Length: 202
Image (cartoon, rainbow, N blue to C red; front, side):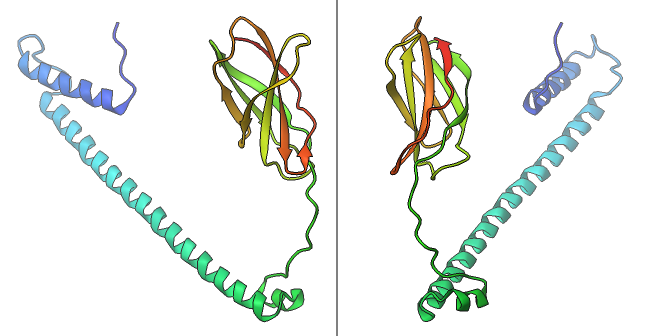
């Protein structure tokens, strides 16, 4: 038994096919509860409403583009005045606070990142695996993440990828092997502690 479609395009296609079929086969379907004329009217109303919605969506997207452009202009102008103020008062913090700004903050030494958290492998397939994790809650800012792998139970850890976001898809992973993965956050100051490990047979 056929199922009623879900997507708009499939619903419209079925409606058009039904209308044509009912018109061309009056002898078979002499008295449908909704006449072909009424069905055509409802179809026309839908198309009109869709056109209005499409135009409104396009207008909204353009409004967002215009808003972002106006915001960027505001940011550029504010930064220009802030640079002028910093130079004018030689980065005097007290004077810059008069305009809601502040002087140069003291430089702090970069420290290695903390431990990468909650490593998971929610999806995998033949020869590939998708890993995601959470960034460290302590330590210095993370520049990238180093992904390592070893063959269980005690093979050597080797680098198999780098990521700047907290996820990666590793491909071309040797199949039918029992692999173990971990992630390490890194920056110029060094490496954080390894994450928990996840195991996979691809």
